[in-house]
Length: 385
Image 1 (spheres, rainbow, N blue to C red):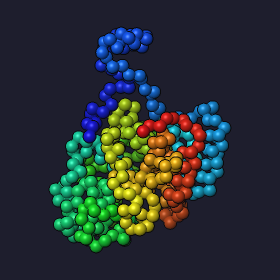
Image 2 (image 1 turned 45 degrees about the vertical axis):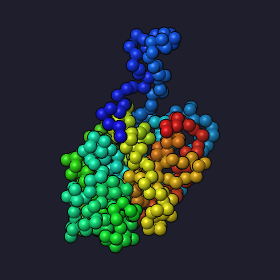
Image 3 (image 1 turned 30 degrees about the vertical axis):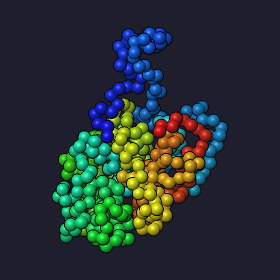
Image 4 (image 1 turned 90 degrees about the vertical axis):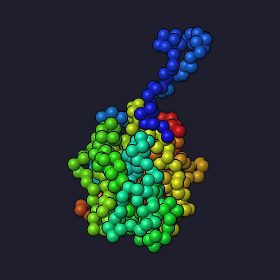
């Protein structure tokens, strides 16, 4: 893997030539540079990033066909219980609907965020993904079985630990878990909050930093998140069931889009490698195809899984081919579409008037809107992979 300290040091267009030779090249003295033996490169277009706030794509850059498709998307989104949706293409806002500044819990999006945070600590050897729970002294209420304690950190990130101890919070597929001790670590996928919460505990033990402290300094500050409030965040759950608590995040739609755009840019933000590029590739590489997921209803969703990111399994002609997403219950999504240089963030804010039992915007409905946006002939940016 690439050392994060070495990524991004050479700016686009730099060479090993002295400045005066580069000046001659810029003036057109190409033959002289060839004689010097220096390898000149063409400067790459500078990427567009948001500063204190997102910049909108100028209306003048959107052709009639683009505007027509965006209008159709807006009409469809208004039929959903969407709080806010924001699509970024080429680093600028292409589409926005609803209060994108509204902050609320994003549920399992938290897991994908933790996966991003792991990156620099894996690459600098603070975290070794092949260490086992036994190596780290991670146990739980009532004790883990010897076979469960052989699960590695990478098994937790892939939801393949084989640990079926009760989790501190619900919202997973634990009800369909096999008998404890029946599956060897790494052999069986089950979307299981115990894995994800224990991965949070391991992160804090190995880095010596709280999850929210690390997020604030490693990601929120350099990304200039507009609405993140560290004081609102704390680990939670039923500690009598498990000592490994959940780590809920409260984010706005526009800040979710910044996290997605960081992933789209392969972890690089204005020349600073916040998440190592090799790590971005690894966590969005399929470890479990949909067909190998358990239980059956999980397999039928049609998504593969990497390290805490869902991977779309799309036909070759789909505008979303190669896309991946963070996904939280009720309708919280960060969808990254490299083929279209696009990020789509979606929020279904809950609770509603204190009620948590409210309607959802499921992946079928959300992805219909996403396909409309990705297929729109706007092209406010270039492919980035």
